[in-house]
Length: 130
Image (cartoon, rainbow, N blue to C red; front, top):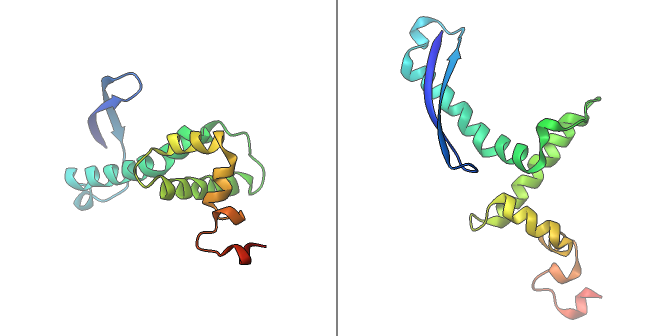
């Protein structure tokens, strides 16, 4: 068993809270020292923050009612693909949330980003567009 104490800053409320997490591991004692367990825990949260948080926050995936067959896995893959494309076009200048709001307000941008319209193809001469 192990215990991790952490402080969490909530961006929305601007509040700092303290959390205590208890855990249990099946690792043998020689692989379960404090530094190793902390590294494993931090690695988990790094993944959670980078991908899952974006998907949960922007797509409200945790409340999805898709539950049959391969539907949940397929939707997760589509959401991850979309989040990846949005992150690529945001280029760190805007957040994924801001970029999604821009795209929601202007569907034409979606097609331009995906290079699905003739106007979005750069460097093509007018004679080749026809």
